[in-house]
Image 1 (tube, rainbow over the protein chains, first blue to last red):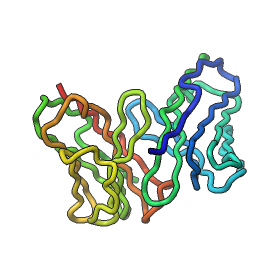
Image 2: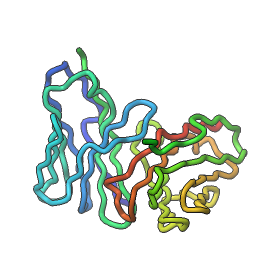
Image 3: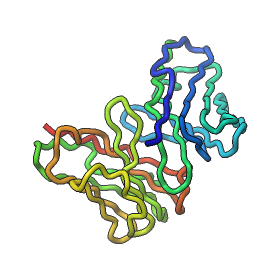
Image 4: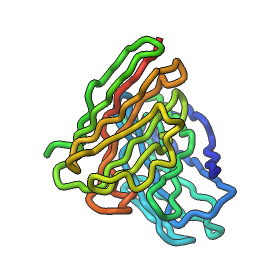
Length: 110
Length: 115
């Protein structure tokens, strides 16, 4: 079945640093999504990408839909302590099924 | 306004028992999704409802798992003869329309532990 490879698995950074994480797939997706999950909560959508090559920002977050449609990355600039959490990429090809990566666990040291 | 709610928040059961997990979607949302999230993994799709009908149940792992949504609002995920491998967080999400996966709103999940 379809799988997403998300890296890195975890990151330990200093407050103020920039963060980059990415997601690759062997399959083509029509939509890439990036979510954040806090402990004890469900994932919350950060950014949705709909076109190959699309670059979209949401505050300090920037995400890109790879031109091959098989990858995406998320950047966080000037990290702050509340950025701590698990970031998931997800791909969607149509129908109703969203495929999630295993997540990148972000730890920010103040 | 109220988000997606799930009850119970935690459930501990013994191997072989039957459990029901409930999801209350956001009012007016016609689409409802169930996911399972194992430790250290992302959510895994189980089933999708549009209104009262299951439009896609291809993610249900076996026939011990069943979900209903009789009135097109509240949904119940039912697991028979639970096994230790069923231990996970079960997430529910809802969205306004069919296929609006990017506008899914997730509930906090039910943490199921099978002893």
